[in-house]
Image 1 (spheres, one colour):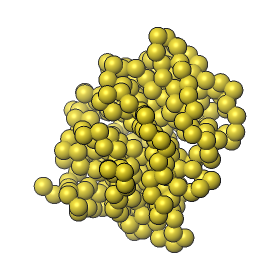
Image 2: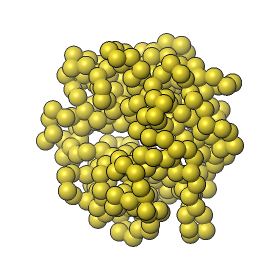
Image 3: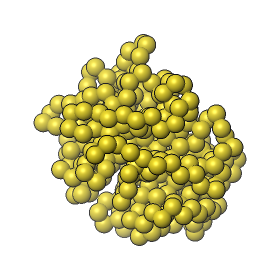
Image 4: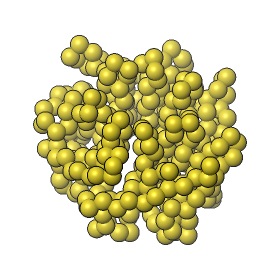
Length: 319
């Protein structure tokens, strides 16, 4: 079946989207306007939209969201050296995960839930990768690796094992770490500096997507799987600008989907892999924005245009 989509425009104003998550009945976006507390945009599967106020303020752009039993869990940098978490993003109650963080002010956060609903939090400090897990009402924090972290991603498999991927500016390589395994340099030929994404398929195989910035001229969105001790990769979208944000997800048939803004002529591009072949469609020409892809009962992408900051939040629904 050919890759197809529809575009929805909500009545909610476009804003900076920090992270996205899915629940059985809805998709959730964690967003904010300049100087304002977080707002959660909820899109139900019958295309109804709601704004949920959180009352939580933040420092920088690092924030994450996950959904447990219909409640949005949030993690964010409450100060430059402190990370906070709440089990209900609309309640106003929060607890400290870690403080005293040192290094550059650039942080990276990702939040996932294990099969029991236990939150697992990745914290990229700019100098190291930390993994935090909440058990028994308290947080345990361990260091996964050191390095100059530019982008990081987290996924938890069906057994509760955490998988972490990141780009290290020191060696200019993308790395993958899994529970019980050593840190792996994914591929010496790829430098995924921008927008590293990670997902685990039904067979427990890690899928990565990132922008290959190893060449000085042309940049490409790369997708690959780590299987049998090696990284099998292909180009999902070619000739994209730097810096760039991308969206990545696996659909119900475990097919990888990537959404990215390419050149000005390409605009917003959606790509899906079927077997060894990538199918690509142009969603909106001339658009530069912040794409996200959200898995769940349906694959939904969202974007906010850099060129049209006052427009409504729009959604791409893969059909």
